Amino acid sequence: MFQLSSLRRHWFPVCRARELGRRPLKRALLGEAIVLFRTDDGHPAALRDRCAHRNAPLSAGWVSDSSLVCPYHGWRFDHAGVCQGVPGRCGVAAHPSRSVPSYRSVEQGGLVWVRLDAEGERGLPETQPRTQGDAVAIGEFTLTASLIDGLENFLDPTHTHFVHTGVVRDGASRRRVTAMVRGEPDRVEAEYIGEGRQSGLVSRLFGMGIDSSVGRFILPATAELEYLAAGKSRLLIRLFFSPVSERELKVFAIASGSSAPLPAWMVVPPLRAMLQLVARQDQRILALQLANVERFGSEQFSSTELDIMRPHILRLLRTDAAGEAAKPFEQQVDLLL
Ligand code: FES
Ligand SMILES: [Fe+2]
Image (cartoon, rainbow, N blue to C red; front, side, top):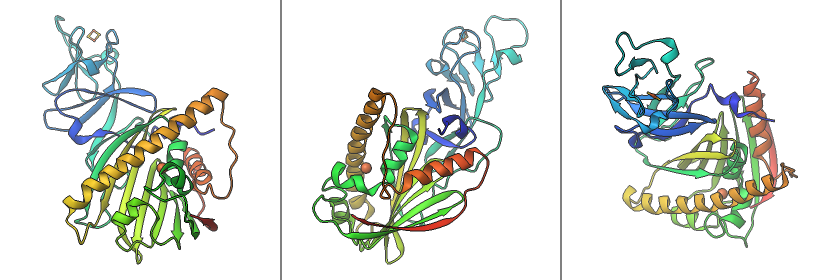
């Protein structure tokens, strides 16, 4: 089994940058309860959401002078979790027993990222659009699902005919497609060649000469869908999966691409609406899947070669957790999409 705790040294987004203002924000990451706030110079700070005194949630408190104030007896904690004030006490407030654990946090790509473990730092995922000047849209949604099921869902083309009928692909007209699957130490991608434009509404509106698509998983929990026209990237949808717990995910989506020949304001709102619809459809089926797995007590999955990504996602996560690098490979899968 893959353990979520092996991801503690990786960066995960926990909120959108604009959500984090002057008030503390309650979040959870990999089962850990955290509170976020901003110091006076605008930097994000992340602490364990439990006061060292009587364990009240610091997220119910407030920010004052770059410190987080506990709502119960007013203990104050700075960005590093060091207690800087015990109201009514004569003498120095700071003492190791009065500190709360702090986590590294940083702002990038319109999101606030947190890393739970100080040891074995991994780099931040790439958040920049492929091409400078591309229109960018950011969205956020939650899924009741395990990390692996959520990642698999986004990168699996064979559910789209059923869950997203008419939106991504329609159920009637399938074409023979070749998936070129390539693995590298930190990623695996499947390029779907020969489908031409997908049969659903999304491609009809945003077709733009698209002739192939790529589904890509990048360690630790990034999933990308890229649409290409004559080998050039036209639309890139990046999902950053952030595990709240074993059965809940926060997902941050960044879509970027060229809207040409149309202006961005004409393309972005309908694209956003359609992605929200697709997300709602996946939310529903993933919640049903998990509820049924829990109803039966455990997973008992049967797979075919069409379930391209899941084994590779699991293999990459396991090799990474073991501190090893996965071997590169290439394979071909034929399917009807
Ligand atoms: S519980 Fe936080 S100050 Fe007492
Ligand atoms: Fe889906």
